[in-house]
Image (cartoon, rainbow, N blue to C red; front, side, top):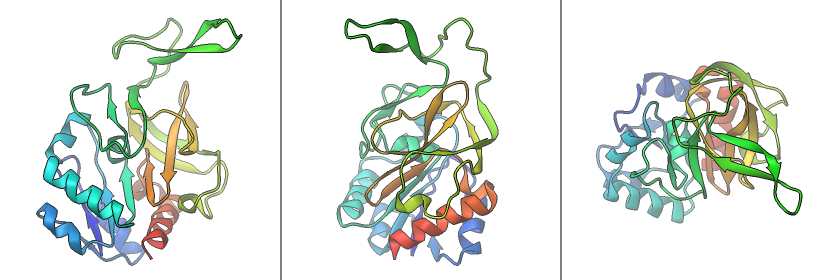
Length: 224
């Protein structure tokens, strides 16, 4: 059974429908103790990072306990961002901390034209409401965009290079060693992440056609 968390950060109907299409058994836990019955957990969500405050300490403890037992976890959109340490969107709200780094507003993480003493470009983080001159792409990022695969992991098994998926977001996760695929919207950001049996997608697989269903199937394979 897949536990689909409902913390009032988006309509679960489309996610449930997509999971039903691929034959997944799904339930919505009413309390943290209900996660004891889950073979895998999905954290969906849209909107402001502050909405994740509803997943308070008892929920966090239950989720981390299940992950510690080897049960797979998938974060979707806001749910993926919550896997990280936090987000500039709600600086006082901590993330789950399973992945390192903080999420940032698109258009605020840019490359300075200057270089450090060793010749490398310097990455700088601006304040959440600031952008460099010439940053003319639209935020939020809404619509179909392509995936550039960086490494082969179980969550992208069978997903072709350049596959199109559906996004709607203003904040994004940093690119690091856990990044499986990136997407470009004025700048590159992490579109898919995976560390072991913990994975996340910035887009909405339930709105991304056959590619999205394939990713959800891959998650079910992780669950076993």
